[in-house]
Amino acid sequence: MFDLELTRGITITPDLAQWKAFRQELDRIQVWRWQSRYDRPAPPDGESWYVVIVDWPRQFIYSSGNVYPENWDDFLRAIRALVGGREFE
Image (cartoon, rainbow, N blue to C red):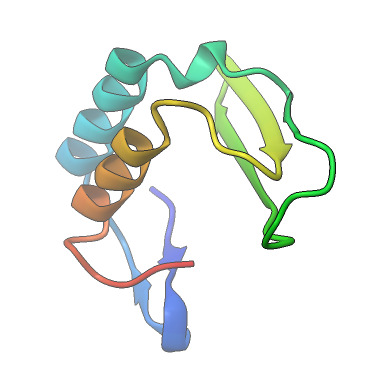
């Protein structure tokens, strides 16, 4: 199991069932097919992001950019479910 550190120094430890549900959701929304970069020239807000997910030994993804993949909101919902609705960054 792994701990997740959230905003304000809160650490949670999801149980095996929570990790399994999260992994199934990642499969459903196909994050493993994300491109490595999502960029547009001169983003208007200067915001950028990156995600590293390792499901050893099966999957690995590093993706980043200044625009989001179209299923980004689904990904955020999956994380919120994993962390019990708590705030995260």
